[in-house]
Length: 459
Image 1 (cartoon, one colour):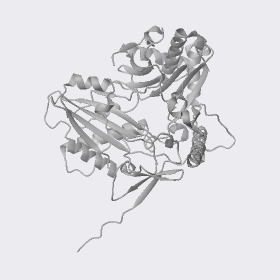
Image 2 (cartoon, rainbow, N blue to C red; image 1 turned 90 degrees about the vertical axis):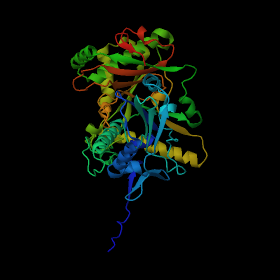
Image 3 (cartoon, rainbow, N blue to C red; image 1 turned 90 degrees about the horizontal axis):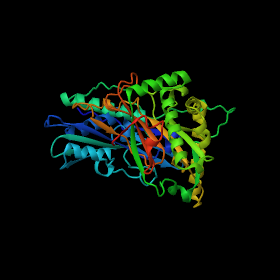
Image 4 (cartoon, rainbow, N blue to C red; image 1 turned 180 degrees about the horizontal axis):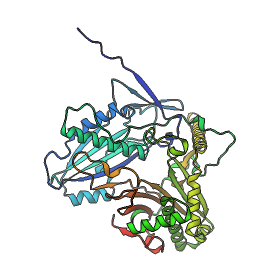
């Protein structure tokens, strides 16, 4: 007796109906795992690949799907019986642990991260992968480095690190029992974002200064740092300094992160004014990525990619004159305006501009391109993203937690990433916290009285 194979089913997930379409880029990270005992079988590549394929086929099916473009609409199409499995590559280098660690800290993505194609979704490249992995082994067997690239349109930072924690947990369970078919995942598998049409309030209109319209033929130039070399400095916020910041935050009625952002903004602003007094009347920009799920009434466990950007702008002299409490309130107001109706307005603004860009492309016209304002040139920029609550160091594949996880280097003046250290717990602030700061090479952060209080770590 023969049994017919189950009929193939097709499912579509649209990325055109939410703000994620703007994030047609890849985002990369490097995770270092130290093999202290030089044990054999450390990070078996076949087990890595097997566990990843099970995860995406069973729990994250869009990650094993394909992009499909039809006019201005972009869908992710995935099936029950065929899969665009994430590519996993390996290499072995004749290096010791210290050498490969230095390459990680120097953000040598060419060596340690899989090369991704252009993230721009076009009809001619529907097969671009959603997720790529490169495992680097050492001849000395002292460590393994996992380099990963993921397409930002499907997952934001929260969802990505949940994905990584789930992958590592599944791999750890397979490590002991290779024939398992059911797994305990620490986080609900999450991707996508539900329809937000119900959030629209026609009685409200918003400006969106967090985005900038740039002449299309000049768009690429905005991404260039100019003549100045952008370098990265890592500031360490000690446990005692975090406690002091929390106390200040309570006094001013803001969050810990908002208080830290105020310190960073005022510190950078004062330093740049000190270096060039002629910018006093020019723009000083604060911008950040905001997760508005709670305000939109959507659980973080159900969706991804609703992150939007928000900003606040004053003159350099105004920020210099304000005290930290006032600046913390500006930061708080910028974040607090990201309500559900603001989210819908942001999406609608992006969607309408995307329609215009497509029209211009089809008619060979040079129009405008929409860009995040933080990549445009400004005299002072403080652009903050916070990853301190993500389960970054919970990624144990069966061989212990990572020794170090490297965030992506952002080569834009004023970009700052708040990043946990291995023992950091956001609830208790029991370990130091790092801030990765991108600035021109000639800018010495220790000349700022506000920033000099933080230890400058060798990167």
